[in-house]
Image (cartoon, rainbow, N blue to C red):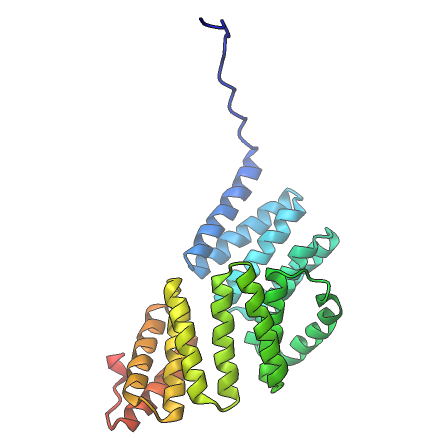
Length: 286
């Protein structure tokens, strides 16, 4: 028997005002272009989102858009522009007392300063962050910080402390099921072994990184690991045929990925591998 309920569907919510919808569209487009790694277009979309959120005085979303704009500029190779946008994000997140987002800005700035070889800025930032880093909870943010600090210590030649940071970061990434973070640490451990003049151990570590990046279908990580293993096999004087093959494939992959900044080192390593194998070098074959 029917209850006699006269049911009607709820009315759909009214659409957001046009300026809010425009800002949301820009942010969604920026996110899609970031995922597609179309960095020039992502920069334009995130800049539009920043401008539109500023017009709305939506400071929280403005800060997030600034962070994403900074990261897109970083990946596009505009380190100065990336640094400026991330510093603006830091100020906004600090004013809004959003500590987690503030730390994400700081971690991105550490990466930009390292890539841009702004050594003094990097040292000052670590000095400022160090006293607060112990307050980071055991999780992804702490893992990211330890990974960046390990890289800095590795470049400075403090190998034991760098190894300890990488080990701790790897354990934290594993606890949060962050496979990409774990793979990044393995590649950093391989670089550390290279800096310690242990090419045979580094070659094995690069092979482990390659397997991890392949499992995640990460093309850039695959190419970097191929080059790393090829470079260390070449340095050890072992498996020169494999070294040549890996370096050729890495060069081709960097070319396909339009990673121009990675090409000079890779091509030079390939030339040296061919020379050791008694073969001519022809750049047109890459």
